[in-house]
Image 1 (cartoon, rainbow, N blue to C red):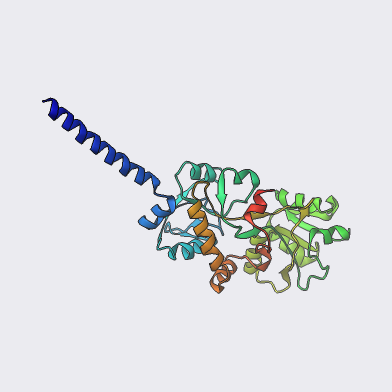
Image 2: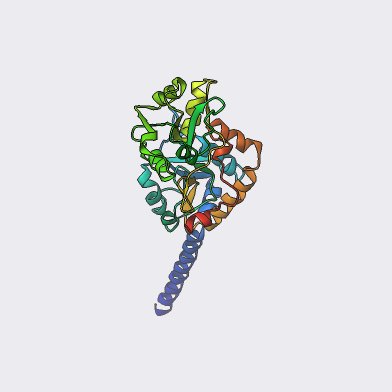
Length: 291
């Protein structure tokens, strides 16, 4: 009986060892490997157009979704499992493992870089100004507005980011004209009551396209505000967990290639992003994270 006992003990030990080895192997599988083997990626989104949002039939769309489809199709990953969450739930949900990736409606910031790993910046989320055709006052920055006290700039009530940026560049309070909504801002430009209407650039571009008024255009180029060497605008991109370095490297590699194609430009343009919203040369995630 004693021999049998030891034999059973040895068998059980062997089974336990095999289980532990198998478990270690499963745990060693990276997020990228799981995504590729299952053909599905779990994506966090906040239902915010034009970035990532659900259509009435539940299908995800938006600029980042289309870009991601091109990137992941190349990896053989066709299915996106969208997880709707609040803006504040994006990073916590990613860190908790509920998502594999969060979409690029969030800015790359030094404090966030300590929590998640950002892909290289995808686009600029800055300001834009609508002016009369031909830009008669030659407005290409908030600094241009500040130089001429006679210039009046409209903004939508509640748009504190816009007014803060303008004031930081020297624009005086009496140059800023509050309007109740975006439609009123464009109407003020059309009527000549103001010289420009400032709004987040991608929203401005989308609204101008819908307006279809040849007498109103987006001031281009437009120099985004920089104070004390630091930009007062955002660079946005995707984010993954800090430990998912192989996924991060793969995304950066695929995007570096895709961003040079006409398809990428077409997608960005479709959702209102122009050359003025592209990331300037030399700007990298590492530099942004360093502050």
